[in-house]
Length: 469
Image (cartoon, rainbow, N blue to C red):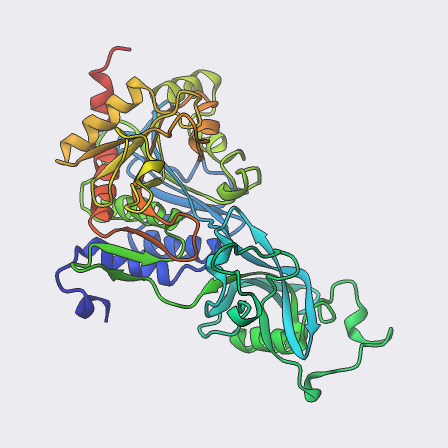
């Protein structure tokens, strides 16, 4: 259906829409990336196993941590320990609302669901939207058989309604709301048939492992039905709210992507697509040179401090497993290069003064190099030069972004990863409304990002050999 709707749009943008619509949570994004990689012949590794007898030159591998972060890599055909890594690092989380561990709420005849804000969202954009639930659920019917299943309810079940203007006449002049008391989603009407007595102390629901009393029974029944299990077989979950309006192309010439979670599933898709496509191409893996890597982290929006975030040991562990001695590890780090790819702030036509006048990138204008003297972004003259050379090899375009001196600068995964000793450059693709429930980016920029990552994977090592620094 997507291809019929957008006949003159780059194929990469159409593939991006499919990925976006199938990935309402980091768990789904990692799962869908895994499926794409396996279709390209990548072998799944487990962190708990010994990789030494498995890894072979010319091999394609990936591993997942906690269902929420993914690293994939290809080895050159004559791979040996001490080889550098050419890495694209992104993140798969976005600001959203998470269902609380005890979410059961009722007020004024409505069933409501308690939620917690995650990340720095533009929260007013979540009001009056058709919302649903997705995430992972721990299910099992006996003490020895539990599994984590993904769920995505494909219809609107929740809404956070605004107050009518008749009851707040100043709403268009000074709109504010309390994120705790005035930001609670409505699930339905608390009809008399839904009101059930509290469980007694002898009920199954009082067991420490039971969550039956923590949530509306109707909500648990809905989730259970999606998974074809009984409600009492649900032992825990991590559920997030998401916008049911699908990701689409827009603009007079389909030049835009209108979607939730573009920050940063856009970059994550491009990284997966570039590495998987390279893996699918016969004899595309180089004889020698760097190991090609993509790293999709979780929890960037809340600081990256977690077992699946950029401040975990994911990259250091990969480096040390590929080069286990102190000498080969130091050699590998010195040869490595990391492209930290998030999204970038394109100039807004209604707020042009928010950009420094000489650093005002545009949507579909190509790759944005992000620089900050205070190292909130890690780009420097050497890493920027290398990146520009890679872009030039594919005929791409470059834009520059620095924040104004009178505004705070954001950051991403690059600064921490540079502390390992890696050379890092921070880049992005232009977008508007970052952290809104509906964001806007460019349909042509999708291929620009894929081309850059492909250029990195195909030719970083010989390029690096030409640089004396």
